[in-house]
Amino acid sequence: MYYKDMEINDQFQITLTSEEYDMLNEVMPFAASFDFTEHHEGRTFDILWDKILNADHQIKFEEIK
Image (tube, rainbow, N blue to C red):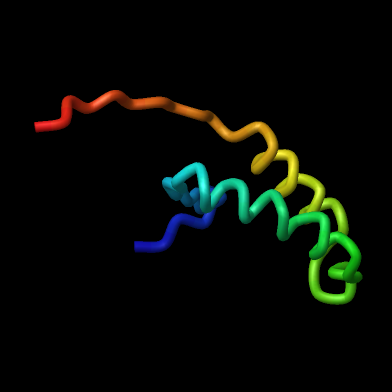
């Protein structure tokens, strides 16, 4: 089926542990030192970094059996 009057946007969601999130925050400043504008719009990196910094943090408590 062809939707000529529609714009399609993808969205992805991942779940990270605290350790994984911390590592991602350490990697981003290092990655920022490279020039991604050759392959991507420069603003895209800034938007991604903002999303990482403003991630929804949920703490779940589970009873240990």
